Image 1 (cartoon, rainbow, N blue to C red):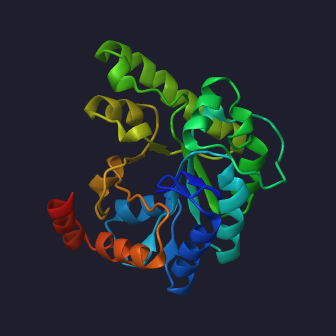
Image 2 (tube, one colour):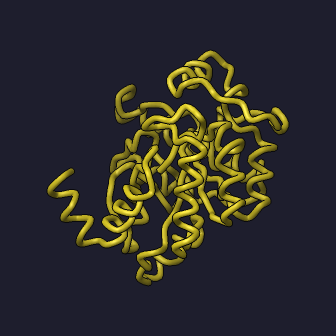
Length: 256
């Protein structure tokens, strides 16, 4: 799981140099990357996922995903899924210059100030990435609200059905594709939210919970692992642990 790829480099920002090393590691070792349709077909059918099969995901839809991550994904022919907050994505055209974005916190503040176009992907950039066949755009909700903290259950029901439906329809209308996957902001979800997401038409629900995915039941709570600005030795360790269900479960039981 990633958010940013840009020169700042910290836990939530992976430098382009470090990201390229990570992608080179995957490509040279023969890892297969999946889009959401491919993962659904494997889990739904009950087929076993090979140790060298994985999914690269990005949350939110930051501009640096296009400026820095996308060229590297193309270089190594690796697929990725970007979960976008649809109300933050604007019609701005395509940015050519590789600018360094502000810090993550500053980016969030700019979005709150109504300046999302300065730091988020545009629909044109998204269309270009989708057209490559490597990037799969899916939903990260429409508004990125902390509904569990802000609303009671009655308010949650009304809000979630509207918010999740708008996000799904926006992606489908803008890109001419089916949007079946939803990633919960901050991983926040509940039995109620999962039920509403299914009613809204989603069939894959992504969380921030660590672990592996190997059964059809996992489709409603797909686990992910934060990668961050780490070297390839640490990446290899994470891949070894979390591509093996029993080892992953034991590791998380001991270390959390």
